[in-house]
Image (cartoon, rainbow, N blue to C red):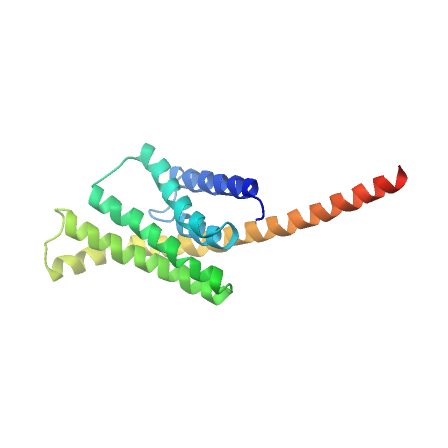
Length: 185
């Protein structure tokens, strides 16, 4: 992405996609929020990698509903941390780094948010046994998130890579047409 306008349009598109996915039927926690952070870091810039997932969460939470502010803070904080972590992908832009950072993002979200659920909800005994039970019950959500991240991350990278190539192709074609037209005049 080169211009601010292109970045804004792409950012709004990512937000719209992220909000839409949160409203359609999907496996619990299988959303494109990690993918949005990673793609934003690479194609839009560092601050976008933090802002876009948080804005997407907030907009969809306005409709889905808010919950215990401490648990919610762990969710938003996790995505801010993932946004910071995504800077590594900009520094090391390769598939292996992408896979590792995507997997680490899913794992960090699982560890942080389940700890917050254990610590701040009345559902679990406040002991090591209660914490382990919370993590055990959270495993299906972790699986779903990892699956969603494994699908949405390469999908969004493909869309942006193809879009970048297509934009360059059409810009070159437009320039050739302009030159051909100028030669006729």
